[in-house]
Amino acid sequence: MLCRYAREMAGMFKPRMTSSREGITVLEDLRWRRWNGAVADVWHAACEAGAHGYYVAKDPRLFVVLERSGGGSDLKLSPGANEVVASRAEHHLTFVPAGMPLWSRIDAPMTIRHLDIHFDVDTLSSRIGEELDADRLSTPRLRFTDARMMSLARLIAAECMDGDGHHDLYGDGLIVALFIDLMQLARVPERKRGALAPWQLRRVTDFIEANCLRNIRLQELAELAELSQSYFSHAFKAATGLAPYQWHTQARLKRVQQMLAGDMPLTDIAAAAGFADQAHLTRVFRRAFGQTPGAWRRGLRAN
Image (cartoon, rainbow, N blue to C red; front, side, top):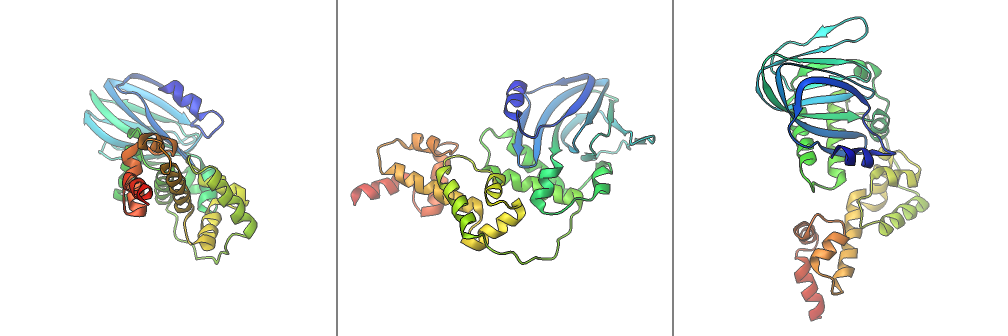
């Protein structure tokens, strides 16, 4: 699993962490997902009494305790010459700035399932469309609670654990929502944004049509239009009345309709069109057209 992780991350944003640990045993294979601006991974581990670990990452990360049973632990950060020791109270989230070491020590045997989210700050700043507060990015937050952020983190962890999961845009949205809460970003005054120019719209829609049977990342489309992701999303909707993912879904389903005109089995169509399975295709198709792919095919042949 870790080897596959390394291969798939080649040439893309990847967490850069140095760590050492003693008395900590990983109980399950690593579950992870990569989205536009972050990598998230879920770990399940058993810790002996006296176990300890040291971690330092080159990118900021959020550590989220999802489940814990047994003893407690101490966390210690060392920002510069000052040391801060966390209280032993049971909390759920810890934000660790880039380059800041973290030590953990376990006082009694326990098992823990936790989520790590590693943030690609440059990409997220571009997606949000504004510069991020350097002070907030460099200020640690130890074992804090936030109900909304915890709910978002659990949804992200569920996507990591689910072998199929939702469309990438679902996870992209969760990551941005969580990061906005984490950075405490307020709503900025609405700026009037125009629609895509004809050449931009043609270039983007042609690309979607040619690649509709695979997942298309918002970043790819924004780069084609030579715009930031945030500006592109608004400009595309202003030009078409649809969000980019909705246009993509429509193009994918039109291609499915073309395949249904032939004799390809529904299971093969679902695989070719990038759906998790036939049931997934059926749900999306019914929601769009009010009937199943099989019923649509029978109606086509009856005519």
